[in-house]
Image (cartoon, rainbow, N blue to C red):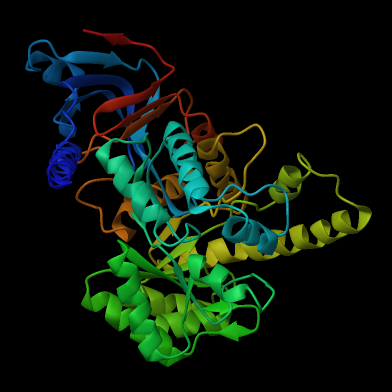
Length: 448
């Protein structure tokens, strides 16, 4: 038994050591492109070359200049007339959920009670791969991943066990008692809720919940400020923020109502997720405090109805309800986007995509948000900034992502058309590179 134990310990030690070995960086690569988008200015740079070494961008400039001193034997990828952009970032992802056509509460319930943690993990691996293939090289997962599913997915991607975007994980959501949008039999509720949420009703519980999430590997904390008629108390929200900031992590808050947004803003959170009823006064306070608003407008227009009709037959009553919902969004959505743009507040965008969209991989379904934002009045250049350079700043990753500049990670995508003219080009990403490694190339042009 003692010999067996020694052997097992040695095997575990070797396995751990091998798992921790960094992946070999891709060989030096030179990308040639007729158009590279400077996302800050919203203008193209013509006939550009991007030199990549050790997974990072070393140099960007005119093709003639950089080609002249590129390393010998460099791999050349000529993307022709394609438009080249930084990798996209989804700031409100749910990578461990892929619900079918059902009510939101039922979707959460199925994920929490109807799937094992192992199934959730495997689902997350699939969603992560599809997200990356759609051009999303980074994602902020804002809950609904079981206790530590998104942290485990992040680590698996970093270790090279599975393919996916760079992930920031929030682990379990902090919510008022009872979780969020879930109605369960009280006799069995607690054991189910504990898999998905950390319930907080006083400052001591709030601080403990933050520490528990950090123990399980959270990169930031997600809080639900309002859910129906329930609101987190101001002293509870303040305790969450103080404990998280003390540990150097940010706080993202689901807040749709004026009361919920106000509680979060006064506590000094880092981002408001959704912000449906945000007022000009609250936007001014957010600008002053440097608080982001993360807009999640994916299903504006008839997009939600069109999605559901791919899976179920909507009754006449359902059709009437959707028509009323769409009229409301048609009025409130453009007003909200216009107020955000006018206020000059920091903003990013997120998909809030948690559905299995028939006929679309997760990355393409996620990109539906871009056309929705355009329909609500956001200019394409602002949409692109919100999902690249702004998003990187929200995540604290300005030093590594969001732009095509020397020193940044070589996270690069390309599309055939012009997303400044038709933002839905981002639903048809043809080339994806992450960290200097080509994930997808439907444009050809590889050569030595």
